[in-house]
Length: 296
Image (cartoon, rainbow, N blue to C red; front, side, top):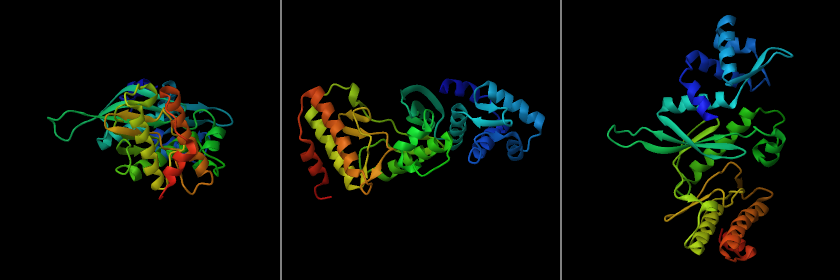
């Protein structure tokens, strides 16, 4: 839980953070990073290192094993602490608030960024912590194209790669389609502007036809950029008086993907099904797909 991270975060010093970084780096090559490898990276003597590792272990920042050798892994709380430390140093985040969203593969928190001018109000932002690999590596590999050819990877690798992938595509698409503004990225976390409005699944629309047309228009623009969201539904579309915004991009594919047509159809089907069930609006799936692909 991020609340536990925040309590412990204030007690971490540079040596603790170096230990966590050493374990993070070691997990590229080891399932359990040997104590000797951590010592080489941190240059701490064994007494200091074991004392600090025990403190981190008791706080669930790291996990350890004694068999077949003494080794350690960084835990999500520890990875959260490293990302937060970087964001604070960069001035991207100055305070973190309530959890506002949680799923199988991410946790989202409100946060604040200090304004450039002291007299200005703090700037609200969102931090999304990726959690890929927390449940099943096999399932994650099955649904993530960027992992299918990797024989060995840690959850750190899966979460970090997903966050970078999402941040990169948001940077590419921002300004061309309606998405929250991406602000920064570190490890498995992304800082972005809050999405405008409210999430579609929890919103009762006064003008559902207008909103549906806005969503389909955005899908067409995304497609014209050579991209398919591939996980689009009422759970990751925000609506406001200004229009719509799409979130959750780590599973995007390009139009050259071998299953591009199938994934586009699934996105559109999910959207049309929501509006048919909730507002009794009917649109022909094949006609909508044809309109999206027209002149592209």
